[in-house]
Image (tube, rainbow, N blue to C red; front, side, top):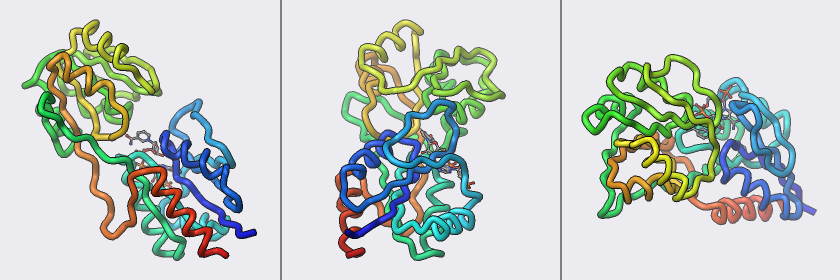
Length: 250
Ligand code: NAP
């Protein structure tokens, strides 16, 4: 029986779903790696390890010591440091790597989106669009908006954000999936005038709710993938790549 030890770099719903699918495959052993940012993470099937590796060299050492045969980087599209580490460690060790990143969002005719290259660019444009702002960029991103004294923020995150925070902020601790009805209620109940989001991709009822309410959206572009990396957009494609690794091990 062929045996492939697979490391999934996780922290996303896709990573959990992929680990679940891999648990059904013959001859695949899965280890999922989590950064350890959330206190009560949703755990995937299979073995789980938690915490950073210590940069690309640490990840390369881990791949060798654990005899990993293949790596799927299924981290969030904005988790650029771990993706860069995975690319470097794969090239150093020769362990094959695929990056699974869901596609970003595309505006429709009824959307009023302003694409910006960074969080600081988002903070620069927000005051010109409104004063009541729904921030959905995650707790590590709220500090970029701290200097905006003339805006009020509803900031949603899984874990409490660390200072600095804006002067006028209500923190909403919540984890998706969210519903269209829920997002409508939030926008209306807090009289939101601007929505700020990363271009994370995936299901996004917040974008549909903003479209309906004709609220402008500031969308932060995702970082570019490292040059030459093999990337796929769906779990099915990642599974195809894993099947190929199993065939190669026979
Ligand atoms: P990041 O900036 O790319 O990573 C910072 C450092 O955290 C990495 O250099 C690595 O430390 C460690 N790390 C990150 N992901 C890891 C993983 N899956 N396993 C082990 N170590 C990991 O990442 P981030 O933006 O802080 O995100 C951290 C985690 O949260 C990621 O796993 C990501 O999938 C998830 N997440 C991020 C976002 C977001 O918007 N950025 C949103 C949802 C979920 P070492 O250098 O020591 O190895």
